[in-house]
Length: 412
Image (cartoon, rainbow, N blue to C red; front, top):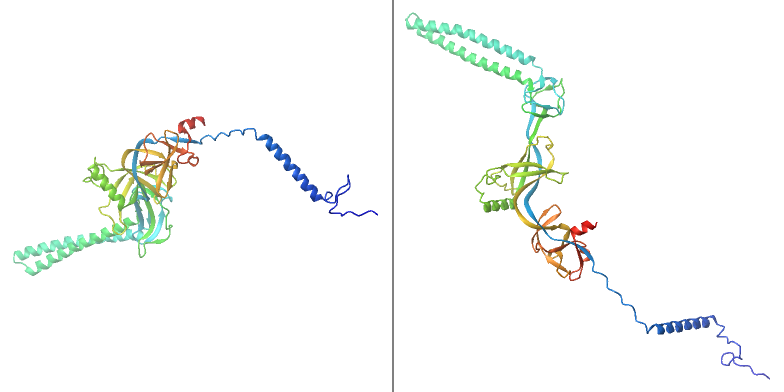
């Protein structure tokens, strides 16, 4: 009788497989073990070989430039509104119907040109009546003068009463006074007749007519008919704040020109200025200061300064905003691109490259902004190599490969 072997504990006959060997999980673990042994064998073969050395990356390239040494002008820049030199309102000074409008809106007119005419007939009649009254009074004066002279002769010869001479002399004087009154009324009538013709009092450009022909004007109040604007020269008024006023006075004290008239330099000439419109970057219109207020406005703390521009080409339109800058002083200074100066909580600083091509942080004190260049008052020397491009690549204390800005521009 054949004994049965234990399926789990006994051994299988030669050439047979156990149930664990037929299990897929067992085969997977076996394959993983063989792969690990192969990897370990390969690693052992490579242990005797040395690993290749990796060279460090080259220092980053930056563009450097030396500060520019040039003349710098200190300007005070303010914004104002362009004003016309003269603006005149044309109004009807007498009542009547507007008879004609003798211009085109926007037209340039000369002083004395007839622009409006009001119906003059009633005023011409008043003039004629006043002239007749004057003539009548003058004729009456001739008779009264003869009567007074005759009465005086009779009184002096005791051929007539004294009282009659006195009465006739008084009558003569009354008529003389009435003549003066009539002549004044004639002058007024002539003046009103002249008001019927409205002429241009100045040269300039006339606005549109606010009243059309045929309308009644001047009733109750002087009716506004049009305006004339003279824009040559043009003016811009600036309100200088108190801090800048003090800076100007200290500068004049230093130059010894404080006794000169405000707004003028040592030679007695008005200080020049420049103007730019709101859409312009360049201050291309030359001008000068022509008035400085005698006191500071206590409510605003500003000093009114008026600048004048000849505006012969009529390019400055009254009412436009404009920027005006006034030069104060000039001196030589070091300038670097504004983009090369960085900021942190401690202030402004620049990244420079020393003789060992290492990056160094240099604290600076900055001044005026000249276009894209910034004046550096303290912290930089004329031979310092300032990083102007590639600042983000530079780290304090790290080495860099500096290239001069001119060389970089040639390579591009």
